[in-house]
Length: 212
Image (cartoon, rainbow, N blue to C red):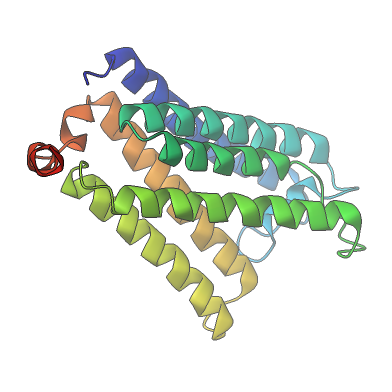
């Protein structure tokens, strides 16, 4: 099925906009915060209860970025003609948007802190399932499958490094963000370049013939 090129553009713009908005918001609000350490503090602390500009960080850095990611996921699912992959990736965006629920630094066991953690954990789980779906979809090109597989492996490795004490939780936090937004940025750029033609490999025809 031919894909409307405007869907490519919308998805690509949404993905790249999410990455750029997050990076710009992090740089701005991290710089404005008098005590925020870009290398040691959790990014979520920018939106913690009582922190300066917390409401603006939560609205811009989490909620707005999450909505863009959700839209990107929906459109990407349409482009690769896989509704489930689109739903999973869009649910990641929704989970990211819900991390706008502020954490309570003074009480990490509070309901809002738990809700924040659950939102990001569920979001990442949906993202991983979405990439797994892309990795094993026969109709997709090798580059798409390879990128999804490598991104998922790096994400798992980042978490494994935390478990075996190779690096700290804040460092894991940053590695996870780098992987997720890195995949989104690369995919977004490819979409803007009209990369849909690359999404369906020569194996697609063979796959369809085998299924006939």
